[in-house]
Image (cartoon, rainbow, N blue to C red):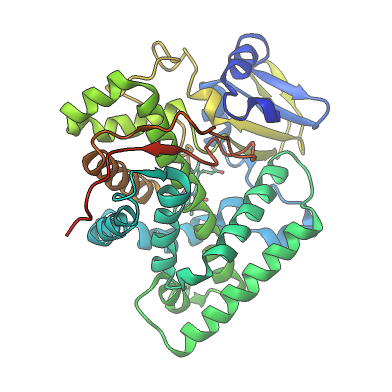
Length: 389
Ligand code: HEM
């Protein structure tokens, strides 16, 4: 399991584990840790053996979302929610994402310096998801606080630990907030995602207010921190690898493959948990029914069994079959949206700030979460330019 000093670079630890104990029982945490690419695929592609229902019975009803359900309820809910994330629906968001990106950059381009995380990468995905749900962005501080609490709950649950009382309190607050919005949409439906869920039915049955609120809670968190970190990690890596940046500037068509490589090389969501439903052998180890397994996507993404020269950052890498959006039935529903936001956001940063560089006078700090690999801040400088028209 990652420790604080490994937050910026857990990769040497992963390499050691893959070489010595790729399926390892951590006696302190009482969980199996899975580090190899193919073993991770095995776990994620077999929900009958490795269940996603990781919350204890005591908190399950309060914390369960589609991401922590197994078939068949998961299949039904996913089918419903996928409608909001089809390629067509996501492409329709493109003009609005361009506008949000331009507005965020307009606030800083004349200043000559910015913090990519606080001025840009945190705001873009949160603005997009709040608009999809049609909840006011003025509640930004609350969303950020709740989202941080939800990340901590997932982090603890993956490791078999109960959520702390203040985290459950944050869940109560977000649920009350969302349930009030849902009741309002029941009265006055709009064209947003919440209104869509209010009118949707599964097998002739409407979703309960609680189910809709849990789904929105999942979208708020899943669609926010991960994408912020993808954008931040991408800019950090490009600024640390000037050759890759020069190549990308001269061949902008490489941006989609550069984004896939960032996802592989600095995986935003490092690990996810599962629970074994039966005794099963994995990598020569016996995992007992009821024991937990944590898959380290970030480690699988650096496994030489799946990637040539895995520790090299190569924006032309193809194919790049990373595990960063998961694998199997829980494969990320928002992958298309996350990629789109990253593409538009990174492209605008590179186009509008042609001499962007790291601000060497400031210290870059990693996030304090160990489930998320990303930055707390990313200070940069550039020549001031007038606002876009
Ligand atoms: C770069 C950005 C993103 C990354 C790296 C990412 C990563 C992941 C991963 C690894 C999973 C699988 C979890 C598991 O198997 O237990 C997942 C699931 C999910 N993601 Fe994302 N995600 C991103 C962006 C988004 C966005 C923008 C949304 C929506 C607005 C979203 C919504 C979801 C949902 C709803 C699930 C659960 C799917 C299910 O249980 O069937 N994600 N994501």
